[in-house]
Image (cartoon, rainbow over all chains, first blue to last red; front, side):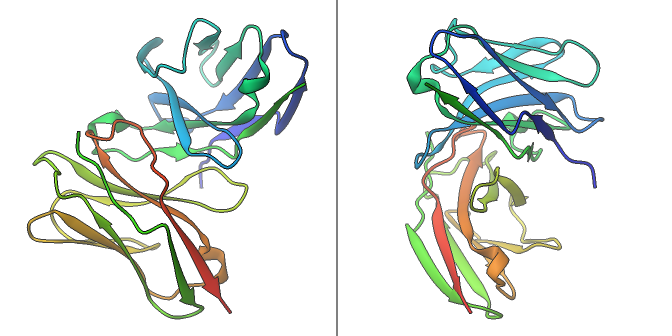
Length: 117
Length: 108
């Protein structure tokens, strides 16, 4: 069964450093998403991406964050200058159609645990 | 903005059916009802979704009230692997927001 994969599974970085989290969405999916979950808290939406453009973003997704689909398979989340409060699990998801409309489901990856020291 | 209300936690015995309720009294006519779950230390997992009619798939059944103000996720035979947090989400009204969900504990 096709699945979303994410690398690395765990990333440790120092405050102020740049990190890139990588995702390979399901191959025939067109919509891509990033979420984060701070330990013990809710899953929070960051951004959705379609047709090489951001289609929606939350208030969390500020100028420190960027997303890119550098090739036909990868989808990346970059944090330019990490802060302690960026420590969280980051989940990538994909869907065939726009999950925001309601008629499509999303498939999530296993996550990358980001630890900022 | 339509919201959902779920119990914080529920318990079930292994191999018994589980009914997880969700209230959404301000649901709009175009809102789909989605259920996801999150097993410990894993990403959210799609379970099922529906608009008006009851839905079945290999994981669960979704029973939607006639007035659509509530729904119930039914796990027909709970296993230990079903212990997770279950999220009821309306889309598009909830955008991409996950609430606190219901933590299901399955006892052997």
